[in-house]
Length: 99
Image (cartoon, rainbow, N blue to C red; front, top):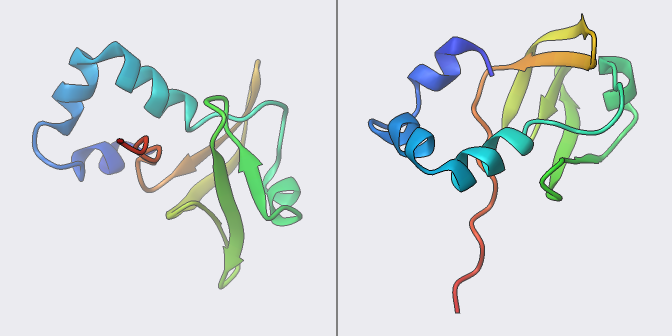
């Protein structure tokens, strides 16, 4: 996510994540998928599976690629270990069902 996405998190949310390593790991791995997917690759999919095992819906709205409820703000940034797509929203994994 872009810096502004973190600034829009509710007050204290970022501090809570930093204090809870398991929650932080879950959020971070919810933003990563295996492989090297370009924006063009994403447009051919209905969903992607994240490293934490959850599925995120992928769609194109008015010519913009959306992943979950986030819009891809900057696509196809090459990195040594993959392709980065900057998004405008911090994606939060679904909460586990409580019994």
